[in-house]
Length: 407
Length: 189
Image 1 (cartoon, rainbow over the protein chains, first blue to last red):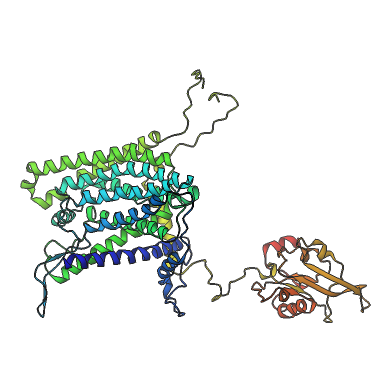
Image 2 (image 1 turned 120 degrees about the horizontal axis):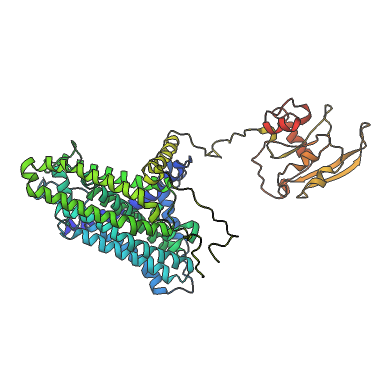
């Protein structure tokens, strides 16, 4: 009981702080990529100490709290208030099942402590963890759609509609990307999935490259990050679904968005990049020492921050997709690739079970099967490269001369 | 609209090359560009100037359009001959001249008062171009501040004192060999 309460408080507080500092990091990255300094004036309040702008999140938070929280007269008031709450609640609840390390070993100090290892997740033994994550992620879509609908504003509504179409399309790709992981590890429990990767040392990014590409692409779309940020693209829709929001309600939306990014990064790390495992640093064996436990948390944190930095770099590296291109990519490229990935994983796993593992041993078999996975991935990529432009081409079709159609 | 209408000229996008179709090369190209800029910024090479802490470097102070000055001749008298060309050229109507008969034999008129409303001025430099005797010029002083509107209306004395302040760093047009800038060189030819 106490254990869960303490973990919840630590996680909720940590995530809120992390979201605030991620905003700062995002702004800093944006500035650096554009040869600017970024926010660097705000340090410790009431002093002249600047601390490279590390006080900026406090100033940002204060600004949001002190600003007028304006509710336009024409909105559906109940849904308008409910939307940001739904969004933040679902974004935060996801972290109940996401582990941020492995376990803390038992500790006894002067009669105080615990006598069994404590898993570093609020609900560590949940066997349907992945289903829970995706169920809650889908609820977050309600927040976006309700926000867009309740605002009674065409920009908001367009943002909400785009968002619903986009998230439904990419939910499929996301699930197919995960299906391969679930198939290979035989469990929906996230801890078990990480353990599978740690046991053999073959991260699922190596074993299932297509699944990884599909999942990462879909994760970008789910988090509405820049190549796919159509629900709220400032250039076209003012602010998208949160155009009419201000003050704390807007803050809730923004925090929820950053939390989605953190969720996506953590899931990428847990499902495909080995979680807390790193060859030579944290292995399967050192599970019951303090050093091992801390190293696992550090490895996991470093990987997560790395993925988040990648998310932020991507924002400035590539232009945004047009909406029809986004849909074409989801339905015509990502869906077939996801299905292919599942098929390949099924064949690989079956071949392991029917003799390869007993002949070579578990670990060499896993490493050996990386080769066919990458061969298939290269072939699939080539097919997409050849067929991709023609299937995603939406320019008006001209019929050859003599084909007379009256409109 | 008929699609085979002869009045419609269809323009095709050029087909994607193999490199573009594979997408990965472009993926890494985009990433390396951002990473290169990121590295450059982290090494301290940013374009931002932290203004109050750090003075901006003005690349061509001789053609910069900042605060005005009224030039003096060799005897320390105001060069202006009160011809009103600058006031006429001024699109913001910020120059106000009161002419009087010149006490000196070399010209007919001189400005009894010469005021510029620095708040109305749009710093276009037309007065400088219009002046036939190189009397009014724009300097490279950019941080012009004041506590009241009255303070920002510069009279003759103030404008002459701006000349005294800047004459060493920025010689008068007629006394310059070269402004060191392409634009000025080009204009001289």
